[in-house]
Length: 279
Ligand code: AMP
Ligand code: MN
Ligand code: MN
Ligand code: MN
Picture 1 (cartoon, rainbow, N blue to C red):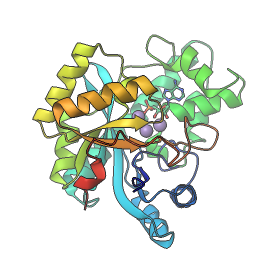
Picture 2: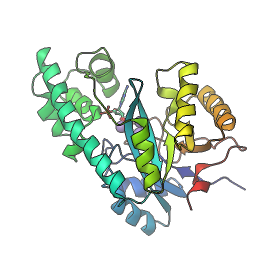
Picture 3: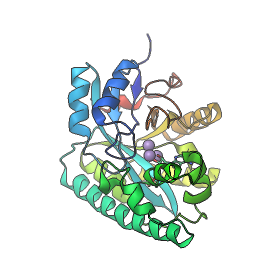
């Protein structure tokens, strides 16, 4: 039997994706996705439209979100899946996280002005369909538009990553908060793209142990930014810790993504797919 084509990680213009939720849904269905979750950063405002379009396309839909946290000063992303989008703990927690983003974006604008690039906060806001979800991706798109670098990765490399002039420290949610909100709302917490964090093997294991202890149940094994070696490595860790495995493209838009919706390798066959926890 062919395994289910599930894609549980992608973004719409409700956060830093380029397409509105309806178009992301139609594109997922067109690419043969059977089970789909929209996982915008820190915002669940797109879920209703996403669910409706998914239903029109005959595609199973799972409510999702990608929550920004920091753990021992490392920024990490936790995907929540299959929760009640009206649960007050989740709704209030995310609202608080978003208000921090606007304040951070102003500080980024000030930092860039200080090196002679003024007006970037205002310019980036022009790229954010949802102003309360201003992200570094909007800064990068605006900065490309005014010719600061040729492409978005170039902007990140020279201006928007730790140690670079437009990067400012920020207090995100804690691991406990993010997992707590997701669990309270009846959902499943999953570590997003574990191969992307700047942590040693030992730190990664400590993080996964803590995540499991407080109720985390899954990790992304196959995802847009994982190499084949990452897939093998995190498949081993999923087996070791008894995590369910997730699969997600992290699609942001046609020209800004590692891989298109649903176009990922299948999970290693012996792993427990995370969709089994969501029925
Ligand atoms: P933020 O949540 O505001 O810190 O922005 C993080 C987002 O920026 C990620 O979700 C990606 O969409 C994007 N991003 C982060 N690093 C890079 C990079 N090196 N190149 C391109 N986009 C990136
Ligand atoms: Mn993003
Ligand atoms: Mn992420
Ligand atoms: Mn993402």
